[in-house]
Figure (cartoon, chains in turn yellow, blue):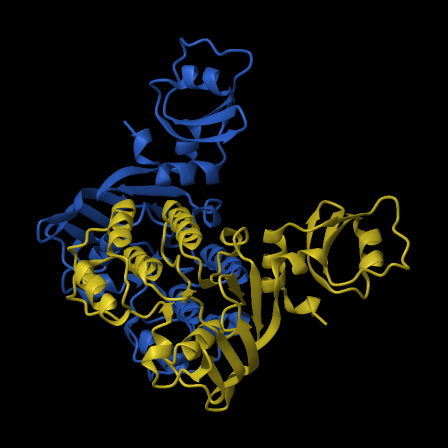
Length: 292
Length: 292
């Protein structure tokens, strides 16, 4: 069973401030998405509109062809894990699992118990007594145990230590293998998800700047390395999305076509970029290196 | 001017659960501390007790010799930046600066304006409209602009993208040079603070496991690298806090004395650990590699 999610020209304004502009996309079934973008790009707003937690100013979200507005059937197919704390501070962990299961039928209690064990989360603690890290862990566990076709994760590793971050992604990949579904992961620790992302959504200044498979992105990304001056000459006018320097050596990262008419000097080499570097440079691209 | 902060046998229980046990320490003036520990170790609880946001079950916090309980004079010398949102959602950024300045006299408005510019934070936005990342940024700016001798930062980079994380630490080091004071930084992105930390506080299971200068820690930390079997033989019984493997090669990270009587095989080399590796291994030490 799969669920089709379509965003149709979604825009969102807060007063005069336009946060999202004309976003159209279709989520593919059984795919792990990386939702990338800088602080304030509009990633959380987009996820909140998808799940009808906030209304769009214009445009539609269709879930299996039905608008997501006041539509519990449709919304039961999507789960959003996010930073705001929606639980009563007095509620105990196991009570929160039960509550969740009331709305999302098919909640996997067995997996939930396994995961609380692995993460060292005591199920009889009250939500209000959990640390920032353990609140994220609780929400992450719920996200993996809910029987929904679309799982949206907004900063799932907020406050998690390195071991717990690694454990979470391991478990995500395992549950994904057992029960394929669509994940959309938004995080600022990009290098930690680079290996698992199959499709990238990049938001820049409220617009969808990229919606493409990792494979296709890698196929048109290059690093050009050599003496600084020669590299700059070779990449002038190309779409340079970032660079690294080491002494007088420079690597320019180019996204998009190289110019086949240019002669590559002997001292300059062109190679593929690895995924982490590509993701980081696409996302963090600084202003002086404007993208076309 | 400096402020002396002393913790005297601080313990904290929630019901039967002991969160902190018998913590005594003294914060040195004009020092950057790294407060390290895994999720749930008790780091945030400690910082909240320091600033009297929650009471200790036993023990005392003394600020310039005075208890911090109901003592605005003492508490005016300490600022805690943390995850809970203490501001009204309707309050605008510039209003929050003014409010802060009412309690913390000497608030640096000029620096605050410079920083909102650098981070791209619009001062007339309401707190409730800020994204998770920008809420952290606002709190970070306040922490750098407050004229207090002790600045406690509890996960200052929660939700910040990579550029903003780097910018924040740059600005921190700059304000520290201009106006020396004590910072205590708690974060799970340890590698990002390794270079600036002068003193490490490590909390394990609610106890202060380490309170030492970075220099002194490095002086008794080693990596032992070579064929897996030889390395295991050489480090058997030593305090191995972590390891890395590459094919059949292994590096064991040892914290504490080596055994001078052991013969080092030709194929095995002993070197210093770099700071990032040391911090990460001290903090994330897994259970099977118990520390003495």
